[in-house]
Amino acid sequence: MSAYVIGLTGGISTGKSNLSSALKKAGAKIIDADEISRSLTAPGGEALPLIRKEFGDRVFDGENLNRRALGEMVFGHEENRKKLNAIVHPMVFAKMRAEIAASDGPVIMDVPLLFECGMDAWCDEIWCAYVPQKIQAKRLMERDRLTYRQAMNRIHSQMPTLEKARRADRVIRTTGSREESVAIVLSMWQETLKKFQPEK
Image (cartoon, rainbow, N blue to C red):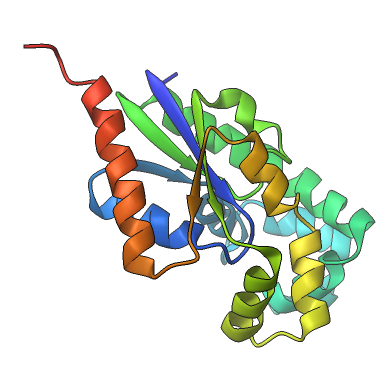
């Protein structure tokens, strides 16, 4: 296990990816759960045979996963969401544990479902990106061209962002500009690095 594990989380469309990208550019070691998950469901990915077995050919275009079709089956349908998570999550966990074990110094786990998956137990500290739900919905509708109902289904498939913020050690309000949010999280990262600098 790394010397120090920071969990970075937040609800959908709260600006977490912007924070994660900025931290990565600043040299932080990022272990991205979504990136690992996408690799598992990319063409030839390890999870595809099990997804096809569970959900059938209707969520595939030939050999490739149709993510939008799968999303329509999963978001707002609790039983299907649990089935998908039971396939993908154990594979993601295994790869993340391996990356943490191979890391030195502080690392950041970028995990949207950190609390839902119990991965908060892996962390020494948790940071949460937060905006009010109405801003989440507006951003999600604009980004993914969704109806309000579709956006709320996606939001409600996760723990409420307000609850995530309540459980976190530090909360990053991302209601301002992208640059303002980045400035906040990079300042937090610099504080973290100072803890691990050898004393002169």
